[in-house]
Length: 126
Image (cartoon, rainbow, N blue to C red):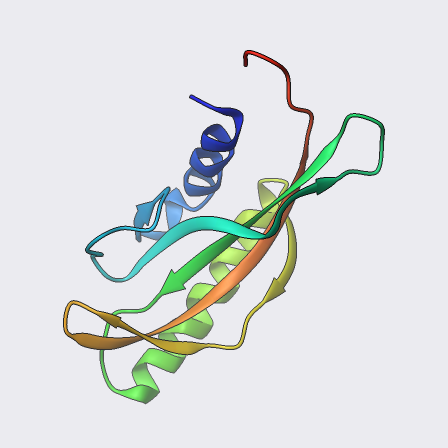
């Protein structure tokens, strides 16, 4: 597995205790509530020391579909739990985006993206 793939798996593993459907990629069809991981922007940039890079991911948190009040409350709880789990696992949480609606399986759900970073040194052939 690539180092980036390993990092995506580590992100998903950090959230394993939250009772969510977890994906290391953008799924074609998603079971809710759930989380998927995708590249952030910028994805990879120079790090603070020579040879080190900063890798950025978006951890997209998605609620179960329902009425707006229940989705908002559920998303608030998911954000707080996910942020705490990620920070406890050593990820730097840069920001949490404004919630927005996204279509899932012919219904609208409320989602937000948690931007996280970690330092990495890429090695050839790893």
